[in-house]
Image 1 (cartoon, rainbow, N blue to C red):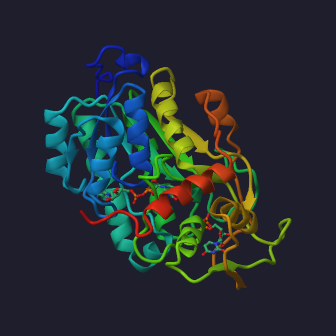
Image 2 (cartoon, helix red, strand yellow):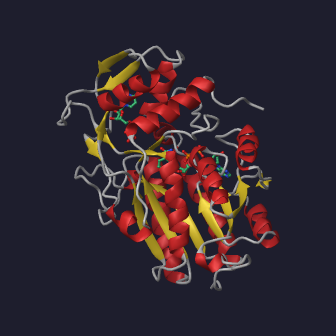
Length: 356
Ligand code: NAD
Ligand code: UDP
């Protein structure tokens, strides 16, 4: 059994001045969250093996925050390294972003996905247990709502998945619920993100997918800078206002803010496990997103309507009511903000982050 949360820094019990371990802190969502944690008065340390990110992100984080960031470069599945980190560092809370996230790749390499996403979580939670760290915010996903066709989606919907990536999220959620039964002192937040997009307003941090992007906004970005010829719209014959599917796009800055709100809330909740949707509650179509991006760029972009993509559903958007009420959080950025910020990032860095 673990003890009470460690509260080394003054005020830690109230969610301020915590020392927060951010796993996957060099990644897209992690990097934006690091900036907001520091702005909110927390101390941050990062574990990342740079499997899907570049070390240069850290230099940018240090420039933006004017702070030196302790970065531990290793694979979280390394149980000994993970335990050593907890033995040597004071850690009050963990935000766990590290994991593989490419849906298509997960079907081709299922074992890698199960091994990495589950293995890193096992190693992390064991070390937390051993060293009395009780607060954990976990990056889950709206993908746990599976092929569920009802919208808006709320946290009480049954969970399932349509690909190995999605199953890793369903399984990790279950594993964490089981851990919380055995260790009721744990305070765990399962954050179910809808469609994260956007970039830091500086234009120096953003999404940098390796290879051809699978997701809509990164694809449009690369069409806009000329790296890709045209957007292929996967079907315009859905039962939606303009025939293209609806998704709940959320600015990464709003998402980051949701994590800070969850961390604070974990200090005052009696529940061992809390589940919160992070979404705007609004569905935006593919055409609406394309046109918003065209407004940001100031010109039209080439596209072609092709057949449906296997596995796509007509509509997915959140009921964010629980997060609004319990976290005092709501998304504030519009679709135009998301496109303007993504375009600033992509136009300043057409090829993403440099290697070094
Ligand atoms: P990302 O790939 O940009 O960031 C993940 C980071 O974790 C990377 O820096 C990677 O190098 C690191 N990492 C991966 N495996 C590791 C390991 N075993 N040890 C140490 N570091 C490791 O992804 P992101 O978009 O920032 O997503 C963060 C989390 O949010 C992921 O868990 C993802 O599944 C989840 N999520 C993302 C989205 C999305 O659309 N971006 C949607 C829902 C949920
Ligand atoms: N989409 C598209 N062309 C692309 C990528 C995505 O038409 O190149 C559509 C996709 O069919 C879906 C929406 O854009 O309707 C969002 O897709 P994304 O992969 O970004 O998110 P997800 O479907 O996983 O929520």
